Length: 401
Image (cartoon, rainbow, N blue to C red; front, side, top):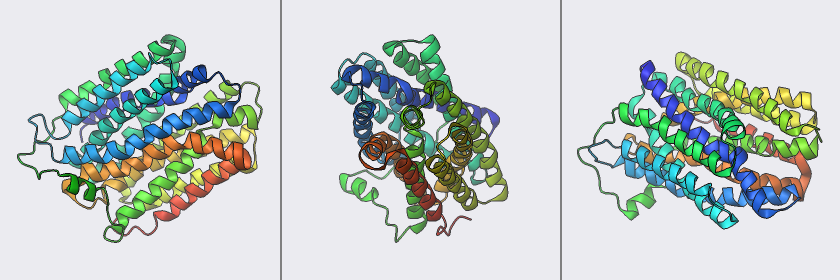
């Protein structure tokens, strides 16, 4: 792909990640906390986790459904473009309305709608990789999904804390930037038209949601690996602020979190771009995914058994190095194990569930683990086990080296 195509693709993802991660990292937790009026941090995290979990259930349907519909779309605008536009619109409008909510129920409803728009948008956009990007470039191009994720997280937090201060202004700014940054890709990148498509029925749709791991074992192993590694990463990062406050009892927990996040993000950016391209060059995916997941497991074990701020900085670097590599190379791997090129939008939608749902459920499950079971040490051990099992799950894959 040309540099111009990649620049438009990366710009679109920058807007998407800002609009999705800034609420998750800051705006939503503050909004929930303001409604609950609870001094016990677990109450706030559990409430946020319930809202996030309900929204995650929407992803279970929205991702594969959008993929299946976009596989069959015969619009004169192309097969993916109408869904990119619709998803961006639903996402942006829902964020605007979310900024006006003053009740927990309203927050839950409009965050679920916002995440549905996010899923519709990203299901179509990730399918474009399989449609248009040669196999030998997919690792590098996939890196331009994860690198903007890192930049978008920091940029979004800076914008809503320094420039667009306040609940409504914060959400409105994210909605506006989402539309502005997705629009150039939508308008300038061509999208192939389908002249005819198989009719989608409820039976065929439901049947398509199930991909037999016996018939397509490489797809099954890749999906399992992605679920486990994303749970490992989410458990390791979802409650970092609470770990600093109540686990390490750091005086300036928010400042320390920003430093940890910056270290993590720098390594995510470098790893996703460098190792995504390197995997293209050497023609291998599995070793990169295995090592990436293992690094995340090691980082989580460091946090579990050596709870110290300096060690947390080192662990943040390892976690970023591992997750950045995983994001780019695993996305490329996923595009190479799809059962049928005619249903790749739907199949990648199923793969995307393995990213969205762990992120949605981790705050709730993590808070329950810490409060009811074995504390922060148990949470990080659970994170390590999930990541290491995810590393092992990639080994049986046969069709991709």
